[in-house]
Length: 97
Image (cartoon, rainbow, N blue to C red; front, top):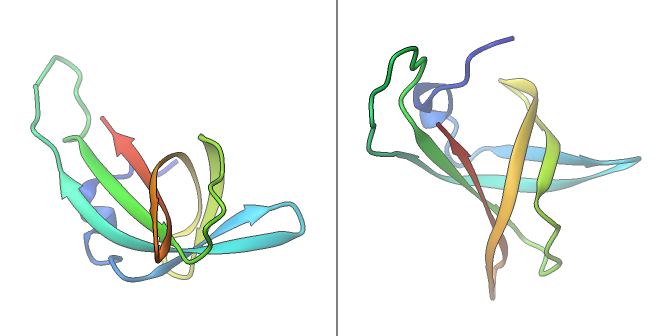
């Protein structure tokens, strides 16, 4: 399994990640990739970071582990948390630490 880092996603900002929902999918756009302050500890394997995804639909999905598919990164299982909704749709965050 590939260790996902901030660098993995940095060049993917603006790209589509299709969230798998059974027989259908929901396109999400990777809107932001943000490094977070590190609190180093023994055995730390990556610097923390967060991802913000935007959906064009106003429907807000519950927080849980979702399968996201990207043309360049392939399939990834990412825990998403809904953090808001605006006139453009729903906003989700994934935090890696």
